[in-house]
Image (cartoon, rainbow, N blue to C red; front, side, top):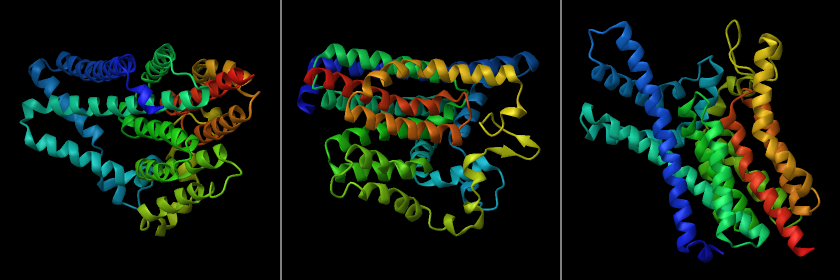
Amino acid sequence: MTKAWTNSQNIFITFVFLCSVFLMLFYDGTIKISNKADILFATNPQIEHAVQVQNQRIIFLDSVMMNLENMDDQSAKNHTIYRQKLRWAYKSLVNGILETLKNSLSENQIKYVIFTFFFFQAVTLTIGFVFMCLSFRVLSARQDEATTALIAFAFFWYYVMSSETPFIREGYFAFTELTCIAAAIYFALRRQMAAFLIVLAIAVANRETGAGMGVIYLIINWGRRRAWIPFVAGPLLLITFNFGFFAAPATYNISHFITPTVEGGAAFLTIFHLDKWPLPYVMLNLFKIFIFLLPALYIVGRAWSCDMGRRFIVLAGIYLTVFLLGAQIGDLMAASFLVPFIVAMYGAHIGNVAKA
């Protein structure tokens, strides 16, 4: 199956996908930097525009490399910072790489560090795309390049929609989690538990929600021996990576993980704070999610007819519930975690039709 992937057409499609994602990230990031520099130059023309751009590059990179000291402060009251404390392991690794690059270059070359960050994200997302295609092939038994191109187009379309989310630094964690989900689906389908556990460890180190990723292996291989191991391993890995964190009493305040708030009211639009936001704003964000997931509704109706399709629908439902509880409504970057399940549903449907 993997060997068939390495033909020239699939390699070309993957390369085009990688370049497209990188260009989108590059455009999205640089246009934000340029726009902020333009505004500051208009209000303070004494400072040259090139200097303003350079300052904004430094600010952008600093925002990506969010201060790790916040993750060591167990007394922090801000929910968003508190939940992100569980992401210190993966963040420390990536921050270390970016910091090394930053220190090895002059201030005028800081743009190359930003380009490296964009490229790293693009490669991460491309790996996720490859695993989605491999899972589709396992489920549908189709090897044609046209299907690969279709998945690439659909996935890129989803990415373009989610890229309007103003938190580009969330890609720091979100792209890695999406790729881990895609890899987890593939290794669960192939029943390669060792590889699955490695992906699970990366997912847990990357983001707290990775602790629940073992449910993918459990449901896909429901009824098989030892299918429960990854399900139990996820929370154990989370505790292992964050042993000191779980000694803090604030860790057991569920509101730190479900209801993002700041002093004085709701910080984000969530299902718990719909009444605190104007109705038109709420409806607009709900409509965004509906449009984003509209293709999935078509696929769900067809995937329900086969056993494996129903399993992926259950998994998508679990992740959708987590999304509604833990993310702000309208955050399409978080909603994009459903894309690997949508692709798998369609693959299960195609495979079921082929067997009929």
